[in-house]
Amino acid sequence: MRLFRSTLTALALALPLAAPTLGLATSAHAAPYTIDNSHTSVLFKTTHLGVSPFWGRFNNVTGSFQYDAAKVDASKVQFEIDVNSVFTADKKRDDHLKSPDFFSAKQFPKITFESTSVKAGKAAGSLSVTGTLTVRGTKKTITVELAKTGEGKDPWGGERIGFEGSFVINRLDYGVSYMPEGLGKDVTIVVAVEGIKG
Amino acid sequence: MDPILALAFGVVVPALVALAFVVVLRRPFARTARGGETDLPAPWAAGFGLAAAYGIGVGLLLGWPDLPPVDVTLVAPWAAGVAAFLGLIRDGRVRGAASGVLGLGLGVFMTGPIEDMTLRVGLIAGVTASMVALERGLARLSERLDPRGAALSQIVLVSGAALAVLFSDTASLAQATGGLAAGLGALFTLGLLWPRAAVLTRAAPAVAAILVTNLWGTTLFANGHPAVLAALTLAPLLVSFIPPLAASRRAILRIAVPAALIGIPIAAAGAFAGLRYFATEDASASEHATGPTDPTSPSAATPATPSGTPTTSGTPTTPGTSGYDPGYGY
View 1 (cartoon, each protein chain N blue to C red):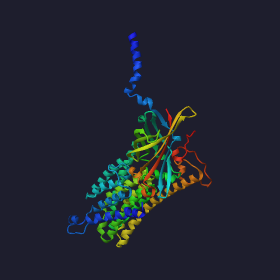
View 2 (view 1 turned 135 degrees about the horizontal axis):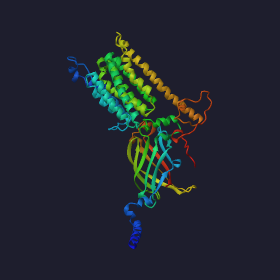
View 3 (view 1 turned 60 degrees about the horizontal axis):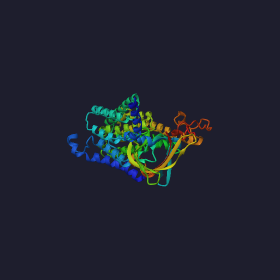
View 4 (view 1 turned 180 degrees about the vertical axis):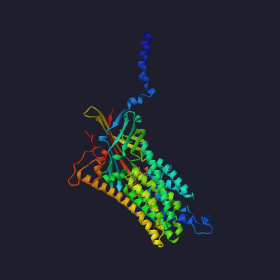
């Protein structure tokens, strides 16, 4: 009986030490966050006839990320944008954006991003996130610099964290090729994400 | 795109490509085509010319489509290329059957994103039937009419299809379909000087493949309407059954009357598509004037209220449709 107890005690002490080698460390340190759609913005900017910048947005973004300030490499990001939620304050234009001229939303209803690596960014506290962006069925690797904008508890007891960043894509690379001169090839995408812990 | 460049890529280049095929693919095949005569185009040349005209136009206007195709709405250049080879088949019935097989393949590919299997099977049958009906209709027109009359009828048909595609919110495919009309226009013009250049019997699979792909593509994946698709698909077949079209002694009547007749259902389909397009535009304007409504509701397609009184702002449903988040708390 004494031998059994001492064996159990030894196991109990050894397990935390062995945990890193069992691959449990990452999930224990990188906290999971769910994207809060109500406080997340995905904006896009292009030019109209080479004259002025024009902004639109996607209203539905879902996804999650894991973030560990101490071990940034363990962080992960994945999100989905509902293409049908594109919003430019003009229904006719939104319908056109959903058509095969642009996003072909019926065949490709989601724009997705999944990180493949996360590193510390150039600025303090920022992240350099590399991953696969899929637009209209075309996958391309991109790197986004995300700055942490804030972190703290909300009035309801939850914990929140925010990041913001922007990147530029050539929409022709993704088969979004209608009116390349009139509407610009380069599209700036601004992402401001708020995540709720847990 | 610069308007001059768009005109060059979408009209001039496709027209020149179609002309080049028909003119170049002539002498080597003339003797076998009709013993003794040396001034005949290869009977299948127009199919290859039109497929190349369309494909090159798409490449210049929209970029070269992926192979294997990823986007179901951009499969027409490849479908036309395959269909051009069907023009090598001499027997019309065999060519029609082969077109049906191509239509089946197109149906399977184009309905790939549709998850409901029962619906998908029905749609595959529809695409196949459209391909057969259109190919047979176009071939019958070319066999029974003055070749130039048949060519002009096809220009009317393809122009109507381009308009219908435009009204389904897909201007890029409309522009590309216009390139096919330009290619046909070039062959028609050449046919006024050299009537045999306008013989398009064996080009029917290529023309049908482009129209079926673009019309079904915009019906399934844009705002196209099945009634417009049906009218455009069946118009050549219906007109081909009107017996005395080729009987007039006056060439102008043999050319113009079939084009005018086929223009009737096509004009009706175009008008219907246009009315739908502008009705939704009006509804959109009404929405902006009176506040957001749910565009997925049937009432969203009708402009304002009959009395002209402002509608209530409606009940927003999802952020994607109304622009407002119903679940917003704080």
